[in-house]
Length: 199
Image 1 (cartoon, one colour):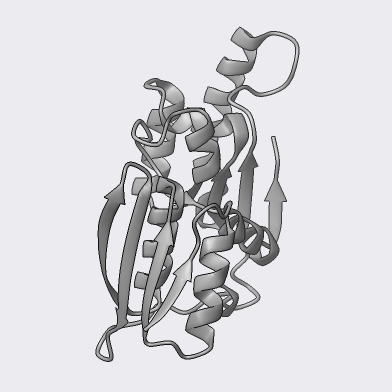
Image 2: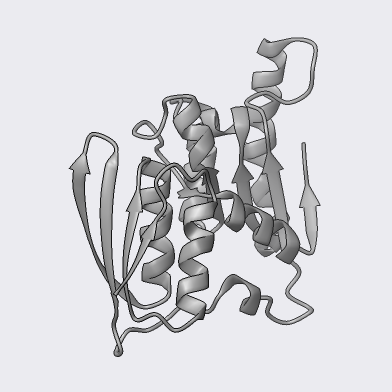
């Protein structure tokens, strides 16, 4: 069993180290992490690669993740293998703030609400929303913006929410929609998208 000491490593380094170990054929791993975004991201990554997990808290901000490859598991393809057919155009929306535009925040809030409510008009071309920096606040504040995001998620739109950003704003537990993610997933998503919209 290989021990990956990821204590003190910032996003997305713990996931990158796990991916390297998985790609090198490691069937049993122990991973040490010291923040909740890393805990969630590492577990999600290893589960997607067919590992059975257990996680144990070893202190206020320290977890040990034990992972063993399940030979019978159905393994999701790696993101770089999910491109699909050329005719399946995928639009990604990158949201970096909780308001749309500059000038008046009240107006910007209303514009963002309208923007999110209008995204379903893209139809099945809308593949993924990525929320970073102040944009993650939209996933944790009750109101029309959150309701629109929840409707999009129910319709099958993937929503990635930056875990480091949630942690910075103290919103990890308040997030009400989307998948806590990391910079590796975000960069990969931007690369895989056919079109990126940044309001």
